[in-house]
Amino acid sequence: MAPIPIWKRGVFVFQKIKKGNKPDYILLTVILGLLIIGIVMVYSSSYVWAEYKYDDSMYYLKRQLLFAGAGVAAMFFIMRIPYNFWRKYAKLIMLCCFVLLFLVLIPGVGMVRGGAQSWIGVGAFSIQPSEFMKLGLIIFLAAYLSENQKFITSFKKGFFPSIILTFTAFGLIMLQPDLGTGMVLVMTCMVMIFVSGARLTHFFGLAAVGLAGFVFLIISAPYRISRITAFLNPWEDPLGDGFQIIQSLYAIGPGGLLGLGLGDSLQKYFYLPEPQTDFIFAILGEELGFIGGTFVIGLFFLLFWRGIRIALEAPDQFGRFLALGIVSMVAIQVMINISVVIGLIPVTGITLPFLSYGGSSLTLALCSVGILLNISINSKI
Image 1 (cartoon, one colour):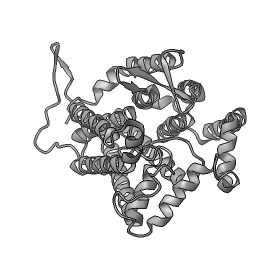
Image 2 (image 1 turned 90 degrees about the horizontal axis):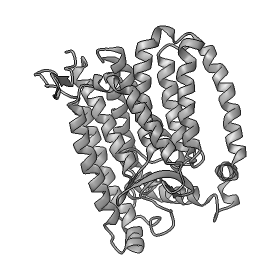
Image 3 (image 1 turned 180 degrees about the vertical axis):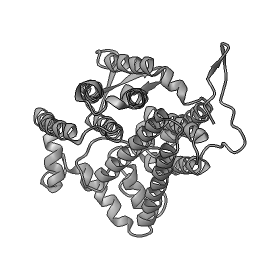
Image 4 (image 1 turned 90 degrees about the vertical axis):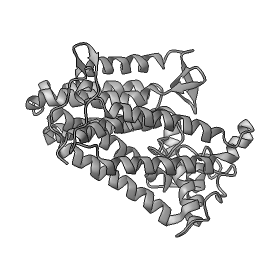
């Protein structure tokens, strides 16, 4: 079924979902399941901190419910918008994302949290422009690759324009600095460009340059070197740079097979900093054990499988690249977050999609799923 234009005679219309063309209900069920688990775990992991900081044990829960409600409403709204609408406005979306990235760097406009100037205040809330950039760049790159795939084997006409745009966005994010989000953005774009048919020789050259640049980024910032050394031997500085990873392992280890029980975590009692955000999976492992952690990872694998199927069965190249970019972004972020929590890679400061506490990250993730669901309506699955 061809997508219905979003504008018809000047009137805003939604896509009509015909009989036999339904959204992927398996994907929708998985997303809602992860969201419910996330809400429960945000409260369980945060009520101690919330009581101490805000004198309200439900502070984070109430805000997460607000973010989740807005995100789910946006997801269902976007699910009814034909995905080709985003192709039409890809350039404008990209321009807006770059403007936001510039604004966040202006003193007095951008807000500093955790040493990074990554937020812009909007009333009582704040937005994180780098989250908008991840989705915006996926939309733009999907449009560019679908229109210029025949040139992708050419370094000058196809590969280089894609790379220069990606690393321009990465550079602006690194000025905040936010290495974790930058890594997710670059890796997602690399997957899209690779699948479009780019030459391996171009990637080998890019890998050499990227490795040199990565080493420079680490050397240029002492705190990144500290994170590397803490990753290699966290016990060298157990009360400093190695503190987070040690406390995370202390949470996961005692969880055992079945966990200590929902709400019975010990690490959330001021041992693991901000347990409701980047290290929420550690609290989940402590309270729900190996079984609970495996169940959540299984839901993510189901999400990736359905997303790949939607991409493969999309009716056109733009839909394929767009679906692939969205599912790759989520998959990469999940892999990095869980790898950090269990000590496989250094701390990067990335949230776990649909589970971690957060406004921009949660709502943008749900908006992305809304686009994916619309592609599934038009796909052959």
